[in-house]
Length: 30
Length: 450
View 1 (cartoon, rainbow over the protein chains, first blue to last red):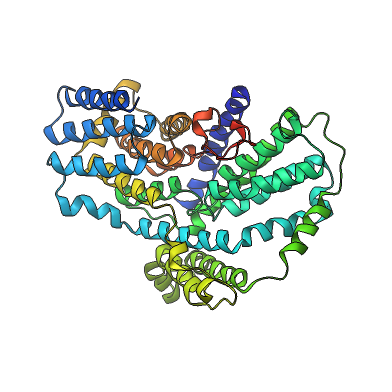
View 2: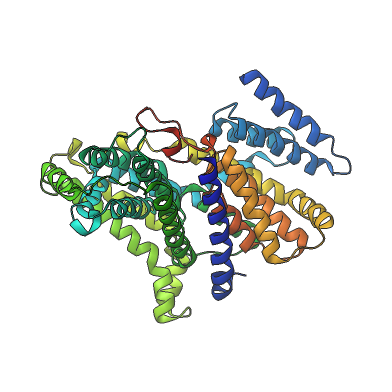
């Protein structure tokens, strides 16, 4: 279960960073 | 055990107090912050009590005058919180959320294969969780999930498919929280700090432009992962849609309370989206846009919507209303207070200059970071802390630090603050990140995050 959780945590990290990086500049927020 | 946690908090206070080279005000805030984090993570005291105590300590140590310290508890975002909590309570009491769940699940395409059913439950959980608290959604959907599993003849304990379904439900609730500003408390904490420290407003629609894509991809990722891990040897597909249709029939026609909740909910949603929509359609300089942006703030919209629950008549409901005050007053005031205390502490960190000192020190250690390096660090810190502490306490701790880091590194603080705020919703790994549930039928891993 810890392994599953770790994969989801990593997935979350990657998606948060990717979407912020992609969209914040479009909104003028970064 | 509580004595030991309290001793640990005292020790943290003492160690922070002895950090050399800090001006007195920063030293006092650092000590208060360190003790609060220990108590938040160890839960030596109820979260709200720690928050209130930290504000009292800031006043006692002479860092913030009393009038200013308690202003944090009247932050507009607190009002938005209360308004959206009351709306969610209306959903819960009228059981409109349950009806919405069965309305989707009665369709055969939504439940045709076991994998499809898993996805449908995850999507339902996420969509409702965009507006209702993550825990309430999971608590509402878990019995529905268990009922459908029973209809399929799946043992809840031991069957991999059951674990997959229950995990999808609870993860969906966490993931849905990031979709809108009001989805989960960490978002509001982030917003409030961004407004305070960076002077930037993030509108309801603006948040959704990154919140919804994040939610959708994360949900898809979770589904693919759970399908891969727990989808082998699925149970034979049975018509769970018929079970859902039977439940829906048993609920009868739409009750006035449900109809009113729907009206209140869509009124609020329209008012929330209006400023952003007008900005897109009419441009930022139009008089209507200016009016909506400056006066129709999200808290105002939430209060108008919540008030509708009290004066739209509902035949058959207690006192003839959709929601009585007794029912509304059962919202989670602890989270509201935790939020107020977190904001007060965060502000003291900025006003005393502690956030900047920490940021400068971190930047000196790491060498000046780029914007996205700082954002990555803030996100990792928030995810890691939310494995141990509640999501709200994690956000209250890491978001001000993230802004401090950004200022120290000389980069714009909005992206790091958002990274930390979103990361606080994404701690999925340890059972300590899960909320205790009265029902022992649900394995600890499948319980909703705190």
